[in-house]
Length: 314
Image: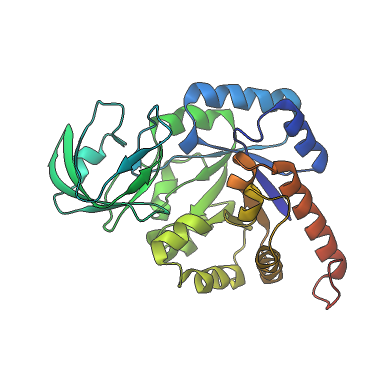
């Protein structure tokens, strides 16, 4: 059972990195959606100075996002009219999105109720109205109900990929996108869109592993449908490993122990045959990154001892 640890402000100091190494994690993940190239290089080298544990680079991919602005957040009020320019600090990325959006398109901010409607579009400027207000964070991803063609790899992705042979490719739509990727890489294809689900057989045939991103996939297929989709994917006999990511020990971002619901969730997916767990916010920004990893290690050890017997995990 693989454990993938996402690095972030809570887990990037030398002491904690060395503790993760002693715990025996399998991958350190750097999420390019929350860093820039200079920060990436510094963190990558910091890990390499400590250990040779593989570093998994998680690409930005073809996803609409707000740019990273120098504020903790921005609040929008319902009915507010805003204008975004391609060259201003608070804007949309990648820049190609200014050529792809159309009037009446709706952009929802992932994992929130914030919703924008496009009113006017030009190559350098977009005018929007706020349908549902709320807070927006730097670099936050947005969803569009229709598919648009955006570059599969961002400029940052192309800069970072040469640093590691372990790459998780984000927001795949189909297996054709993998044709431009060096087949010698350890290609881990993220399943987080409806289009990827439709082409999952071909995607798996061109990958070394699949990573189901629970958060984004559930957002795209709906929360009520997601459990059935997850169970179906884990029950299928793919010839490559399947990893699951995000929303496992979410309560441990603030608390030193998981909830009963989280423990039951882990037990269920282990029984279904998952090959690895990716911790995201739990280790990137949580208060108890090491405790999360220790709990998983203990859980998997106890599970392997009792397997599918009715013995408890005490």
